[in-house]
Length: 557
Image (cartoon, rainbow, N blue to C red):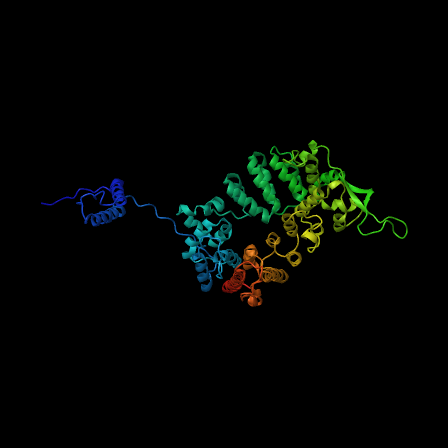
């Protein structure tokens, strides 16, 4: 007689849950199913769990096979050199330890080197080894700051993988249309079809790509559907015109000043004010000139001078007089002036700042006696208006990318209290520095550090080009060495030390060897400070040499 086995259903969850409950309670309190109480009960529980585990893994009903995914796209970029591929695997395998607030030790932080490695690899145009893509996507998933460079390096195969793993869906969101390729920008029919039918992310990417290549074509494409776009979309599209902004954009932006969305109007006004030759800039100049002038009747006598010159004429310096607007009329609002001041801010000073910020900086030399920007900034301002006026000039210099005004407002880096005549905060100084060339920027920050140390320099260092120029690198290292010799609290400089590891020129490593020994600690030094400084400099030197090796492996200078 032939026995026919009945089909076995997949085990239910109740059996497994029962075994888990027995394990938690203990076999002396609950006997496993099918077993007798006693010393053999624990073994019976383990046997039952093993059987149930096999059933849970294998006891699935047959199902129709899923459709096989399409083959991964080809990546035509050259492969990484073998040494660089091994280095990438090492960087991706490193994981930051728990932040316990203690010493970091002398070992380099590999996770902080990954962004630099990716930047060089992308500049060289290499493709990643396929086997590292999962680890690369995992790293980008955990660090949003890493995503742009990581996805650029990962290439088309990363998007193919992201469609198969929900954990990597961020890559599809980051790529326009989930990785759909943009049409050739010279294919007018496909460009217009994508603009009219594509998803919002695809349209933004298309407009940005077209704007970087042919600004006029991008503006015309936007104008073709402007009246039918949603307000929030119009705002995003308008912001893309910052790339390649020029006088030809003025007619379109002037029309946007009448937009029904206040945010769109404000953005259009900001863009127009960045064009010193625009009609809006001229209107703002007229309004600002009515508020700011030289007052020859009220002049300030420079400190340290006598009452009269040898000829009998008092030595005085002209004073800038300010008369802030008394109202915000409809014309001002149309040109982007926000009428309602923020809480705690006076309306008149709020309106004045917006007018001066939007006026071309070329307005002021002829208006204020033919003086240069440096001479204008040095003039006293009556009635306590200096802070408001200079802050508005700072914003105008940043918006109009005017290096001469930025230099004047920054002042000398060794000035008392580290403040230029117009820079009211470190954040503003950092923005003003951004308008200068990389070499000049580094030289100014180096002078600032030499005069004032590192306590306020962190934000300024962040705007300097990487790797730091030699004078800036020397100034940072010298200031760290001075802090070490003074027995300063070492952890207060950890942020600057971390920046130095990422930004100092690797060629400086040999110059730092003398700083690796544990220094003699002054009596007033923080306990253990010398050992910390030695570890920190050891980590800095090791990191610099590792960065040099990374660049050599990637074939970069």
